[in-house]
Amino acid sequence: MSALTCLRNPANAFTALVLLVFATGPVVMPLIGEPFYVIVFARIMVWAIAAVSLNLIMGYGGLISFGHAVYLGLGGYAVGILAFHGVTSGWAQLAVAIGASAAVALVFGAISLRTRGVYFIMITLALAQMIYFLAVSAEQYGSDDGLNILSRSDFGLAFYDLNDQATLYYTVFAVLLASVGVSARLVGSRFGAVLRAAKSNDTRVQAVGVATYRYRLTAFVIAGVMCGIAGFLQANLESFVSPDMMSWPRAGELIFMVVLGGMSTLFGPVTGAFVFLMVSDTLAEWTIHWHIIFGPLLVLVVLFARGGIAGLLNRKSANG
Amino acid sequence: MAEPANMAGLEAPSLEVKGLIKAFGGLTATDNLSLEVAPGELHAVIGPNGAGKTTLVNLLSGLLKPDAGAITFAGRDITRLSAPARVKAGLARSFQITSIFRDFTALENVMLPVQAQQGHSFRFWTPVSRDARLTAPARELLERVGLGERADVRAGDLAYGEQRQLEIAISLATGPSFLLLDEPMAGMGPEESQGLVEFLSALKGRYTMLLVEHDMDAVFALADRITVLVYGRVIATGTPDEIRNDPEVRAAYLGDDQSGEAA
Image (cartoon, rainbow over all chains, first blue to last red; front, side, top):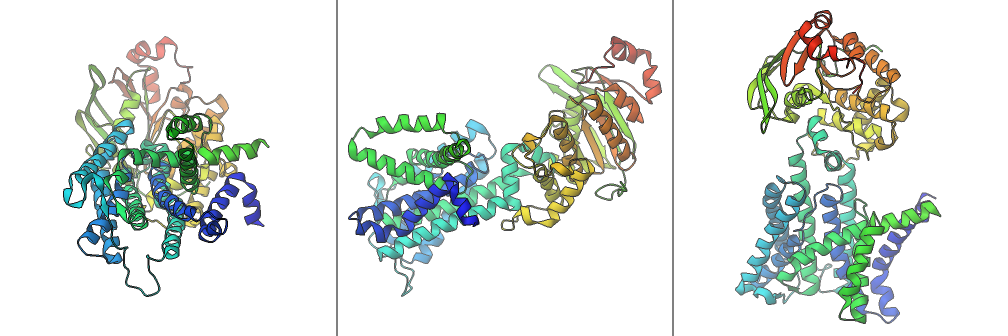
């Protein structure tokens, strides 16, 4: 009963639809003659994981990071650079992806969390640009042109091979569900209560005896690691990494996916990533000047759909 | 309404302020201010607008750092302590401008300080909503301030008077031994004020309190001693009777007919 009443809410129904599309994609899409969409969905899901991780600090913590795509790059280059040197072990690559993301998030967070508001946005951007230019200047690893990855991460398990498309696809799907599940637990926990409270009134949290900085920094690191894992998956999906995946426009798109789907909602970033990428792909098929349509569309969403898609659908249901 | 000594079970502590100075640019908001609050005393601070009362509360609670001077709390120098550390030492404050978590329910507002009191919050997995160690004490506190029925209402949707009650409940939930109350009656109607006077007078003796307030009826009803601030300086300290009859105070403050003013 509760599951059905839950679906009567349009925002939840839309979320369920998107998840259903993801879950059945590899089966349904080839059947209706659109096998190309399987890879599209996998890509969207990777972006969705990154958006879910950003939502943790942006939606629940009020920390608008304009440098979050850097962790996609770190996760991706962990695969690319290790593979380039002949280390194809998935365990090693994943460990480096997580370690590098955590270390960089710890340092960047420690610096940027000393600032507030627009300064925070600018400093996260500036720090991320440092890593971006580091990748651009790394000639050994292809600079601007990026780095081809000749073999996928090898976990050395007979029953688990990322070269199998379905395995890779459902790995991404499972990680997406896990990222939302982990977010749900974090947000509802004592840790999450501090994070959410500090978003709405930092001074008051200090005045009840909690030094918020450490909690924000921890959230920053958790989000960085989650996004680093998305980067690890993206590198495997594309068999390619380039500095572009951590450029500031990518970071901006991540912010937009979160806002579009509905900030501080658990599945908002997932539906946001889905709509954002499906609409931009579709527009791009119609015209090369798709940005001219897409830009104003995004502006309209921000202006008129407070709370993003989730907010819009819920409002409709409240009125009807 | 039988209650423990205070939430933390601490002896009501003393507070001593010596030579406190805080300037904002050219304006000296706190000018060589000294004052003593005895254990268990309810000490009121009054003064006209701009006298530096809220600055004093911010200095005492650690949200501002003084340019000079020392603050001793329960015999310990806390001048350099951060705001969260002072709360842990037992010094809680309420805010003149209602400072609650508007998107949290009333219950969640009180659960946060309860949680803070129970040690660090690096607990990532168990939902707070099902944690009886948080919900039970928080509900009890809401009952105490008269918000028991309103526990599950979003704080932003509470009536103004209820938000003021919640403000006090949040401060009490930190388990303090000392309460710094910054104009708790601000914006309240006469009946609500009367209710709060009764509530605070029931707390007297168990907590040491420093009460900044414009509502003179409340101040003279509650205070053991009163300090009068003008332009960041103490012009008088004494019992309510002494203050009422102090010619300097009458000239500077009470005389110009602000006694009935609320906020």
